[in-house]
Image (cartoon, rainbow, N blue to C red; front, top):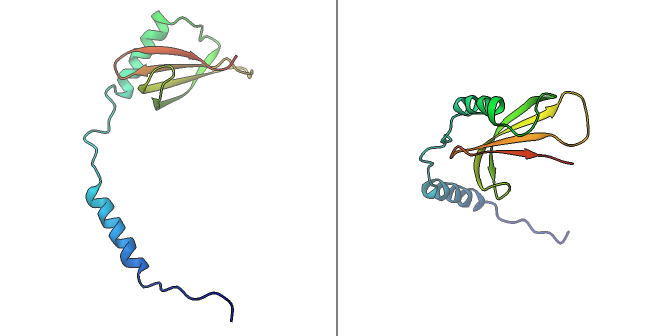
Length: 113
């Protein structure tokens, strides 16, 4: 005989079921999961920003992505639409991002050297 003994498995299913039921009963529902600024409103605001207010030159770049991102602390804490721009020709570093926060503030972020 090997030194292993068979563990009773009849208790696993009831305990697992109890854990699942208590997690569902005590879970909190989200009141509203949609962001304060819609993607369409943000895109229109960023178009105006790029045409009139930007400090950087985006002529050699293309929009490579838009994500809803939560910043912990840098450049500022909060939920923001994050616009990522990449260069048309490959190069190392220097990509740009624009963060459009839910209170309307827009911050340009340079990535890399």
